[in-house]
Length: 288
Image (tube, rainbow, N blue to C red; front, side):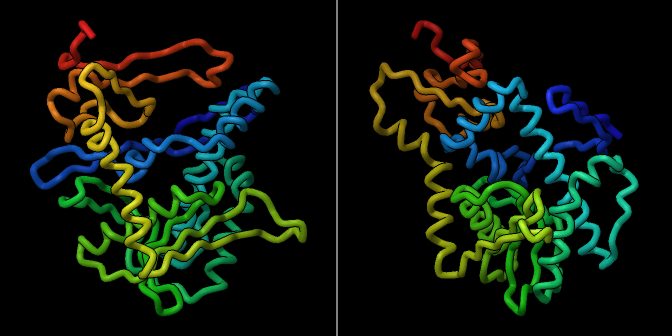
């Protein structure tokens, strides 16, 4: 168990410890996850403004973000255990406080289950694409009212990036031998509705739309190749991602691109914290 403490939120609770396992190809090469690839796109302006508004209230935005992530982890774990056993888990390895805080999205999950006929095929299913050199874990692969689908659970806001993510999972599932037809995002709200009932929303990506959303995902993955083909030879190129290792980012780059590429990590909120971290490798041309 790990004690989570967020002083600016006046919150503390216990969660089980987790270990991140990288996605690898058959030859052992580490590849980025679907979510890491999509982090290249960056955050919408709304999220940046949200972070700034919290800082103005003396609330550490990272504390709030991580707390919301803890709610998501608790809800996902509950859903996984329920889908495997068809029983409500007591979740003894989670602190009582985080279970109480996560009650609304957990009840929303149960309401979603009641609203459909769900026949699980696999939960927390890890997949790797040798063709597209990326990996991902589907929350659920199941028959939903007779439609064989990849389902991803969310406790945050709806977004186009989420559609790219679940479409990529559907393509990974197909490459791994699963003939899924649709992809589905289910959003479990962290707060109860006006009527006091739990809330959920769904985004269904039908088979005819999957290719379009997956093409957008591939565009995000290949963006550096496009930059390389159009950049001036003297131009420096950087990414502000903080989640993808530099070695992974540069894996498919040309040798000349690797000499001018780095990570520039701005500390948020940028307008208040004038700090910049540079991440480089031995391949960088330091004379530039």
